[in-house]
Length: 145
Image (cartoon, rainbow, N blue to C red):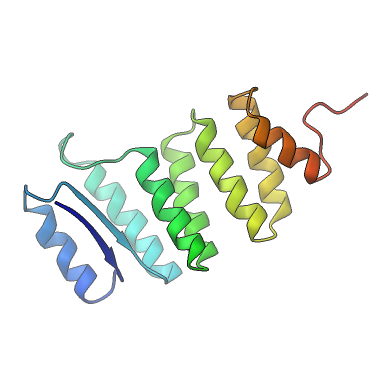
């Protein structure tokens, strides 16, 4: 069974510890629209991740999906926090930097977007989108000397 809980306060906070003890939950994502509770969710994520392998899906795609849903709901700070966690967890992946750059770009955080599009391009030199976005932001991926 897959579950998405919106609102980590109250019911969401009570649900998570109970759900952790149930083996029939295949996938649980808890999201919130409050930065403080997003930080608490990140802390809880780290706790859960220390538990035996195979019980939860900790792939980069799960965190990416959550972050884009938060960004789509106008919760950009929360989305950026989740994407920064994804960068910490999957630093070798070009995709995590590209996603962080996208959300930063959409929110007008040019420096963050530039930094992360550059990192995405370093991880994957064939990333045309990152190269195009760097051009659009006035920082070509291959500047002329």
